[in-house]
Structures are given as C-alpha cells and as structure tokens.
Length: 259
Image (cartoon, rainbow, N blue to C red; front, side):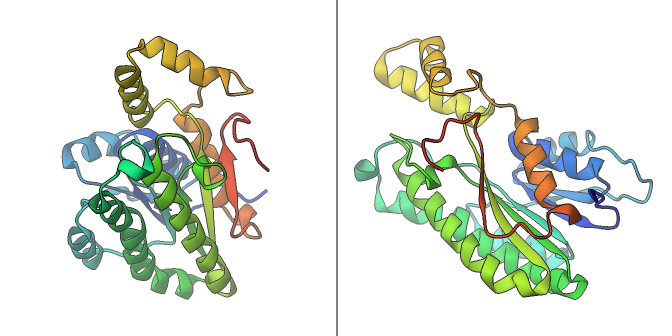
C-alpha cells in the first residue's frame, strides 16, 4: 500500500491544536511538507516544533490568518498557495438551538466554513491540477448524517460544507483531485470541552455527569482521540486512497445512528 507523501505539500487549517494539529503531525510523518494555518502565531510556532521530519528535505512552515476575516486568508494565500493537500478545518459555531440563533450567526459561520473553504480551494487548484494530484479533506461533523441537538447553526453550516464538497468531488475528479469529508464524533478536544461545559452550566449539572451521559451513547464507550481522527484524514490524502472520492467518513466509535 502506497502511503508515502514525500514531495507533497500540505496546508492544514486549524492546526495549532486538536484534530488539526494531530492531522498535521500524521501528514508530516508520511513525508509531506506541512504548513500550519491558524490565527494565533504563538501557538502555531509551538505546534510547528512538534512536526516530525522523516525526510530531511521536508520544509514545515506556518501561515497566519483568521477565518472570521476572509480578506486576511486571501492575503495569506497570495504569499503561498502551492499545495497538493488541503485539510479544511476551523473551529465550529457556538452552540444553541437553531430558532434562537441570530441571522448574523449564520452569516458568520457561512463565511468561516464555506466562503473561506472556497477561497482555499480556488487558490490551491492550479498546483493540484498541474500535478494531477490533489487531496481536499474537510473536517466537519457527524451532524451531516444526523443533526445534533442544541447545535443549530453548526448542523446547518456543516451540511452546506458537505454538499459543497460532494459537488467539488464530481467536478475535480477528472483532474486527479479527490474531495472527502471526515466526520469526527465526540473527540477529546477543547471544542468538546467547551460544549460539555456549556451544557453542564445550562442544565445545572456536573461536567462529569454530562461527559458520562455522552459516553453512554457511544458503542465504543469512550471518547475519541484527535490522533484517531487524524489517521483517517491522513489516509485519505495518500496515493492509496486515490479511488475514494466524494464520501463522508464518520470517526465516532459507532455513535452515528445511520449508515
């Protein structure tokens, strides 16, 4: 099985922590030169120091941009857009019921997750097409298969990203470019901790009670680790995954109640 990414360049969004950082480490371990993309330069530099270099030719770097400001992302991409791999990942919208969210919340989430994704894809496409090799992986949510209660804005926007990705998969497949979505379930990240804490405060319960309630819904009876999601992301970027295109891959311990 060909898992080598030697000679490939990867741009990984939201990679200063959590699943994004874990994905960057996996891609680097497979030989890719990785550029970490996020808004906090200090945390990016800390993450940069953790990237492996099995090949001395690998050149890792950082790119600073804020997905809440598409103009800043566009400016950063003007400096460097020669990548073969895009991991499209950024922080999720805040929780709450769909009917209570302000219209501005939907607009902000659409800019972060769809508009910025489009900016990234359009900037990277020339290099991918020229190489006849491209991998676009969107890290979204199992909510595209079954909406998650109290995540109204996220459920809506993640579904938009999934359908955008499926459309791109059909358009870009003839160029040797695949587009897939990885759907993390409950994973030990700062984002999940924030959601659990908010739920506990809202319901007047302990954080441990909320956590155990969530774990009880998972057939694996535990939370996932960022490294486990990252393994699926990295595989979809390899030559071995060249015929996998336009799919949603849940990494959730079996929690999602649909095929």
